[in-house]
Length: 374
Ligand code: NAD
Image (cartoon, rainbow, N blue to C red; front, top):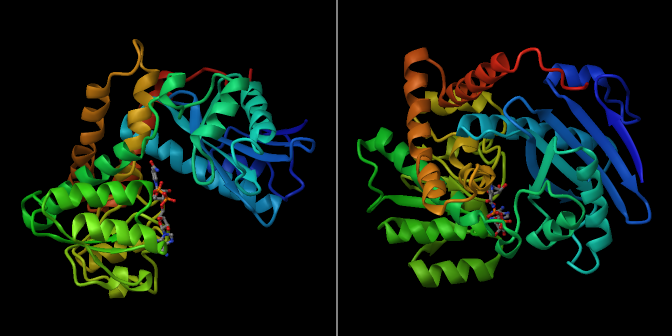
């Protein structure tokens, strides 16, 4: 296995170097390959200020090494913000593997090679499941290292975290509804749900149970048929979902769905969902405010799974009731973004950055003087 560790002292063939790390406040980037196992991996450690950096394993057929490194860095930065804003004592990191997902049997050697890279980081990085990776993959990684977050229940983990993500997003939606209409009750609200995967389908069920009227879209017809049958939702074509005449537009599929092309077509008063990077660019947060649209910030709204899973790292271990209470408190964090936005005359996104940065600054001050690279 070959390793390149980029930590403020070396350079990468991809053209990224220590100046990129310093500019983004990164601590370390590891590029590793194991040709025999078919593994090409990048681990980006953005911050360990609050605790070990944690983030999922994304498996994607990146066109170039540079694309993989840049994506790992972008996602790791997002994890720092997510954990800091959620009040979880973990830092931000991310692993990306160049390639396509493989089944649990064919993928074993590759995942064990990933596990050895994680182990070599000595606990500075904890890996979990993300787009393209599964709990089966985590099980193989766990054979090589203890530093795994998302694990099945029979291995001491909390299992599938998408229920907690859905629950937290619904709590965020209720907080947004309160701001928009003075009451958080979603009964009778018309909600456009984009994406009915692990999180979206569960959220749709919760919203239907709370009396919301659903309009749904997915590129997978079976999922649309199932949710239509179960919740009485009305299906529309995927390209139509954001422009429905609804109260809430809820993205549960892709990022960048609020962009220059779609923003003018959104009729909803509230935009909130579980998708990461809902806004194509930060400037769209200003445009939403100008259009009178209330935005429940993605990295706060979708932190439920991360919060739930992290409870297992507390002394004494996982307590489901406590973990779910923290997931439900996402509503309070969204309310806090509105309070800070009002007080400081900034957007809710700006307020969320500020909340995360304050927590990071508090901890960095406490840990000042500690040398990270020995
Ligand atoms: P998923 O892959 O299970 O579901 C995504 C769904 O979106 C699929 O059903 C897919 O067919 C659908 N989709 C894809 N393109 C679409 C399009 N153009 N229009 C409509 N539907 C489309 O993913 P998930 O785990 O449910 O996560 C959903 C989103 O939430 C992702 O952005 C993910 O990054 C984010 N998220 C998930 C979690 C979690 O706990 N799973 C946590 C935080 C954030």
